[in-house]
Amino acid sequence: MACGIAQALERIGDWWTLLIVRDALFGLSTFDEFRQSLGIPRNTLSTRLSDMVEKGILICEDDPQDGRRKLYSLTDQGRDLWVILLALQQWGNGWIYGPERVPSYMADRETMTPIEQLSPRAADGRALTLEDVTMIEGPGATPLLKAFFDMLNAENAPDTDQSN
Image (cartoon, rainbow, N blue to C red; front, top):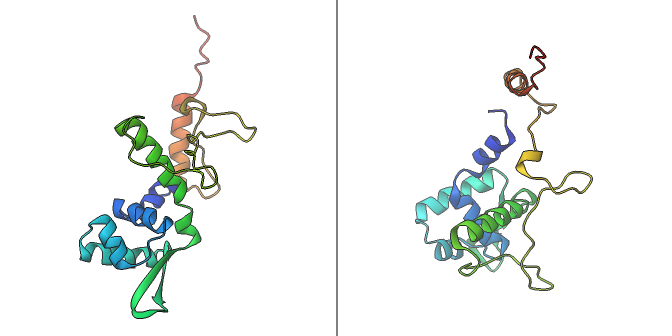
């Protein structure tokens, strides 16, 4: 499917991937650390880590202090997922837990204060709501996607019938 959202979800694979990324962002790097933190079945973790390395989210290297052990670290692609994790955490804390029951939150390391709620902004700095946003075709749009946008634009075109 020619869609950045669909392809990102394909790359991420499943929810374990984001939880592994979360743990790697905050310092975990070995199979046993991930396993202990997540309670994930060994075969699932092994498959997930291999897949994440193959897809360029993680790098796997031999541990210089113990050659039998592998160390996993995030690539730039993997590190860029932190904003997705922040958005998911803010959504979950707000809609699932509420302010009095928040189990954890990401904070500014310098001030230890919670990161401000994510808020999309226009190029000129205006805060945007969902009603202010639309989806448009990009330079890599397929003919099928272009036809889809043409259909949407036709359905959402203002009514110019002046026959009243």
